[in-house]
Length: 168
Image (tube, rainbow, N blue to C red; front, side, top):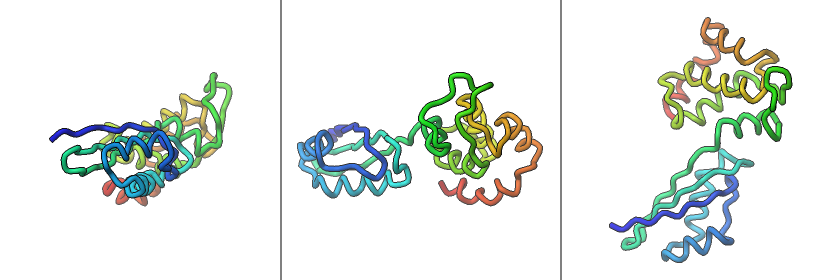
């Protein structure tokens, strides 16, 4: 089966049939609106962020499937913190502050791209990313929050999201 791939960057939940996406889809004989609606449905949780979308098309049967690549951890953290760019000097210049709950939500969104086996490990990874771009967590340095997570101080919050982590 000859599968072709259409790659495109779209704003989460806001793909449109206008060029370049619409013509690329229609050249394979697919219903453009159906594919665009599917893309918007799959990217809706990334609203306001640019995501990469791969559309795999079987040129013989006109079957297709849409794969969404999640945005980078940095772009998710910056959007949540309301910052436009990372700090050039994260040790001295902070660009924003997030709650630990925001960090947990990013960890869940990025689950498929992380090697972490548990939510706790994923949260520590995301906290480290936050530290490198100048974002504090709960008003504290991210490395201090990592220690708190390791010491079990936030187990109650992590337990609250454990089911969501397992099902994502």
